[in-house]
Length: 210
Image 1: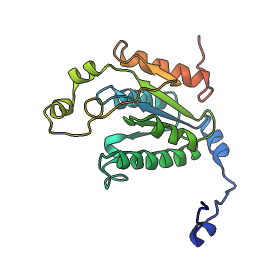
Image 2 (image 1 turned 180 degrees about the horizontal axis):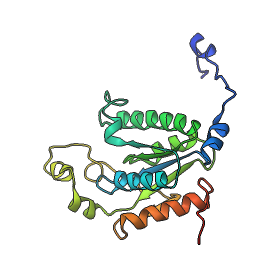
Image 3 (image 1 turned 135 degrees about the horizontal axis):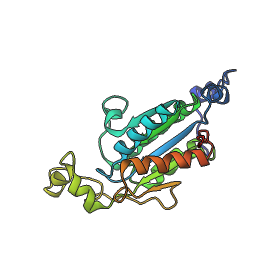
Image 4 (image 1 turned 120 degrees about the horizontal axis):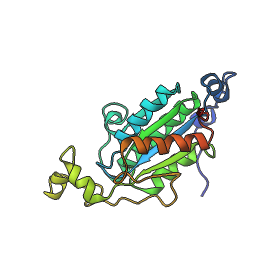
C-alpha cells in the first residue's frame, strides 16, 4: 500500500540555520543530552531530577527540567490516561525535549513512561548517545509506602483506573544507561552517580580534583 503524501507535507521543508546545535552547545561548554527519568509513581523521579538540576546549576551547566505533572497543566492538558493518550503525551514531550537539546541544553525529563515502546520512540528522535535512560529503581511496596499524593490508596480502592503498577503494566527498562538504586541510597548519592555518568560520557567536563 502506497502512503499518500499531502500537498502540505510536500511544502514543508526543514530549514537549516547557521546557528546550530553544536554552536549553541559550545557556547554553554557542554554536550546536549536528554536524561529520561522513568520509574513508578512515587519512585523519586522528580526528586532526583530536581536535585540533579540543582547540582548541575552549581557546576555552571545549562539545563531544563520537564516534569510529568507540570507538562499536563499546559502542553498536554487535553490528554487523558488511556494508552493512546499516554503515547501522545510522551510523543509531545519527546519532540519538546528534542528542541531543547537542539538549543544545547541538558534536558531532564521525569515521566513514568511505563512502556518500552514509548521510551524507544523518544530515543529514536535523538542522535546516538544523546538519549540517556535513567531508571529510578524503587520497588512497588516502597512506592506504596511513600504514596506522597495518596494515589496508590485511591487506585487500590478503585477510585483511579489505569494506574501504573496496580491495574496498568510498568515495563522495567532492559538496558538503562543509568540504573539508580533509589530505595537503597540517599538523594545525594543518586545525584553523584548521575554526575559521574555525565562526566564519563563527556556531556559535562570532568571536575578537577585537588
